[in-house]
Length: 394
Ligand SMILES: *Cc1c(COP(=O)(O)O)cnc(C)c1O
Image (cartoon, rainbow, N blue to C red):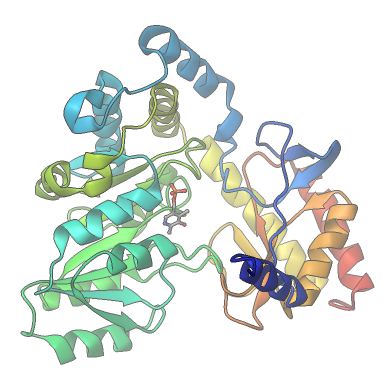
């Protein structure tokens, strides 16, 4: 009798041979500008901890205080007995921060998409998605019985064409886009998407995971960046990136939020965010509401690093945000580059197919407000050294 699982080994070997195998490193320190990995101190260029809040003393204190008062677990799904005062308070503060009517929290941003898309669409409807939308949007769409169409990445002629071709054929049409695209750092033309959607009576939904704490006044996100308050029906957010904790949410029209309380499956069938997570998220929102200092520092750092990388001769793609793709093309080159950087004490992950198209491999540098100027200079020196060594720059 053969081993039923040899195919797994074969598939894994194929991934390794193609340079597509992901090595997962274990951290032995909190998140921050520097990490301890396997006993080695490395400069952190890969987390989504944009504002350095993942280990912020005030937020940590708030989480501890909440544990003393409420314990750790929510005890149940939200609709049965898992909604605590903290969850309700967080949702009120999130809605206020985003300038939306209401908000509902989920265990993650991924879950927020899985909850929302099938809840608002059925087989009589059409979902129109940007070609490069995040995996959680794609999976949310797969869970819906609605028809699907894709428009070319950020291409408004393509979106217009899809809307025109399908006008009058469906009960409802919904247009969904990432706000900031996480692999390239480019921004969706949300103002134009909203104009088109309004013209065709379509519902709009944006996933602001990488825009939160980054774009807009004091990090209020993409809707604030474009001044579109009240015109985007559904804003999905995550609290695992700039907010530094974990959790997801939907902000927008109060009727949508009420509907998700009734029909969002991860809300109804999976327990609520834990007490310390919820309290920490609340503290993050309060911190962001009180000061723009961290968001300002993030942008100063990003502009400094990106300009210096271009001066060195690196191709940083067409980013418009602190996400800095260092385009290398070949998958194996990207892996070799990442490995050499790591040996030099810089932790920058190689990103390759299927996360990005074949032949578009890169190191993605994630700049944070937690980095000092000296940290950035050290990173630049190491990029220059490895870049010359591997013939990427002259
Ligand atoms: C990271 C990300 C998510 C997932 O967020 P989590 O809270 O980590 O589950 C969803 N959508 C987009 C666009 C993301 O970048």
